[in-house]
Length: 331
Image (cartoon, rainbow, N blue to C red):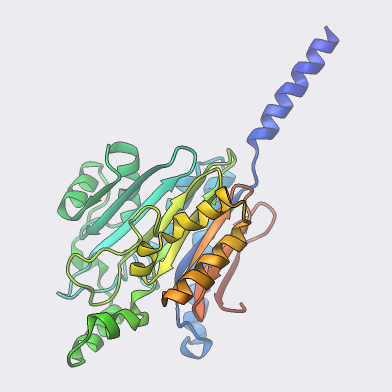
């Protein structure tokens, strides 16, 4: 009898231990020519505080036993609601002076994913993306149909003017004031295309989730869709390898299937996540002329934050390390 109890105790403790994984969350708030000389001390402090708030919101979900998808949404909601980033409130203006927002989320345990593109009235696009994952047979909904779906799911809806900010309006005006703006050169080279937000988390069950949300690029063509809502380009998660959220020049991230490529290198080539991210971001993309970066986690909860620009708003928090946030190449 005692032997049976002992065996059962070992089995139960082993099962519980198998379910306990290192909790981790990593976020980004955009990459680009982010230089210390261009940020006031006040603005830098505001950005660092908001990144920390986002990390704390996401990690709290994990700490309370919540799912990684919920943690990702909690972190991204903080940034979507802040005019400091190009996502939700503070989204950039398109060619006709309106806001079109994109988002996606993916769960690594079963490769389920949801995305919305070109929404104009959904306050938090990442929440709409999750509702697509949870309540739709489709992966991506766009435009008016995506907004209608979000409303049916009882998500908070707003007028398009809710997303207005003076800072983004001035950016848009500056581009429009130029004569003969070239879509292929001036628009795609300006840092106003950056500011996308994202998060990747791993929960106590070892499930990885990744999410990305953006307003796109300033003065973008009406209806333009970047990499953020595209599974495999701007977002990807697979418990067998890693979770990735990207920010940068979306056209390149789409062509090179950046998020999926990194995870595939981890899964099939057995590369470490840091090596895989470096090969794609600092080699493949650089050779092609693509700017930007990624954040990610492997299935052990190890963090990566890789970018080929002057800076990237980013940070992480794990069960082993308190919240840390960074802006520039070195800190």
